Image 1 (cartoon, rainbow, N blue to C red):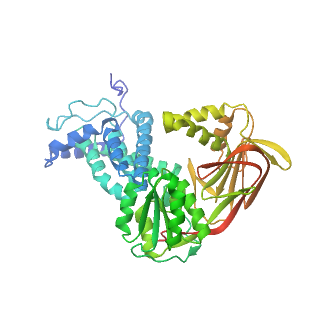
Image 2 (spheres, one colour):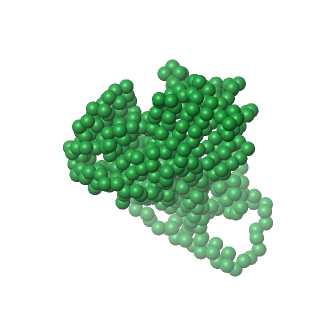
Image 3 (spheres, helix red, strand yellow):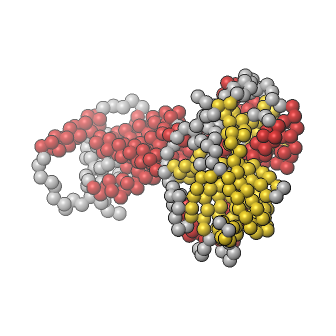
Length: 495
């Protein structure tokens, strides 16, 4: 491998200001080389090597994500995304824009020098950019984790001057570029803190200082053991009932008969069942996120047990809308979404194979089978004419796209169904992808979107699948989707 510094390129002509800055940069580098840094000889060279190719930051992200809180996982993901953008920018633009040679190592004690010296150009510092990008990205999502990571990132940046591989200006420029990359990622994918969910309309709910009167049903199939322990520590007088998935509905009915507040710990499907029971019994609902995605809890700003416990102890609650579907004598509610077409078909196909080959392989196989089918999964009458559709999506509340990220709801009581359809036609995968890309638009050749309070479909073919919050049922004939405004009272931290 040869260095990418072309030494045959003639040096630029004299420039007074630039020359003074470069001279100052060299003097600061020599000053740092002459100083003794107590305790740094063993730590900084090793820390600098560990950051090669981002290894240190990938390991740090894994450690942060292992905490298993939603905010920690988002912080780790944002840190890695920022690091990736910074590295791409440095290696494609930064290093080739200013072809500066590395510092001369004569003033640097041998014990500090790296065993393998880098051969790329010096400006800007890639290690400093990666460190600043990762630390800034983490801090933008979680200031607490950012405070933990920042000293390590600062030490990595300083190690590049300490070991003699960069001038101070290289480090400063790299750090600025890294921080800029983190903010660029935030512009594309905003943090949850940037868009606060609406807390209105507020509701009067019981104040339960230690959880007395709260009965929580936990679905053990969702892996809720750690959350149950945290709940018992936070609200010691709350009653917690753990049960298998097939027993959830029965336990919720029995809990509702003796509770002042009905609680639930599980995924969106389990929360859907609890909402139906709470609505029928006229009880407020307390939700502990315990599944994989937990869309409703997170849109409600309840990300962990601490959020819920604060709301229960303070008596903080709101009223939220429910969606309802009706087909003949069959009814059901949905907190998040209701859909017909491709998605329910995917769920059904995935469930057929997941126990034999695992969740992710089953999902891929299901997508291949559904998208290669010759028939459209949904036929419905729109305006009196039969119309083929690949997908009909109805959200309980308006879903807002956040940059390039999937949307979220900022108001759970807006009285609207967010209806989106993907038109039928050839190449369903391409149509679905085009509809996803055109999400912010209300209409495109592939899809259409509208917000309504009620939607009625006629002529739905027998055996058509309908999914509501992940649960699948069959419908036919006339299907009505409607809103139940402010029908459910739930606990939500308001501060």
